[in-house]
Length: 84
Image (cartoon, rainbow, N blue to C red):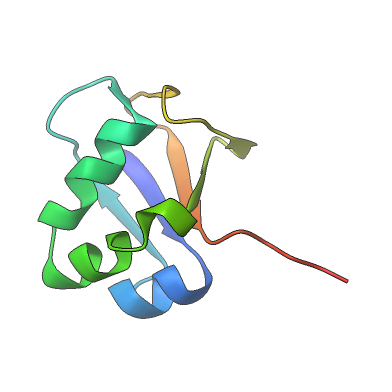
């Protein structure tokens, strides 16, 4: 099981800020997770339609598509952050 955290418009579209899910395989890569998330619900599918705009962090570190996710990991999904 992994802990998924959603921020900003991703959270608004999915309708929750956090959930625990068991991926179809373990470990899986960030890219595989982003392929799997849309299968969870229509809301997840809607949020993942803008996948190219999303960033992912695994255990509070920015992750690339090949980063492995293991059971017990915390995975955050969020849009790019801008500041000023």
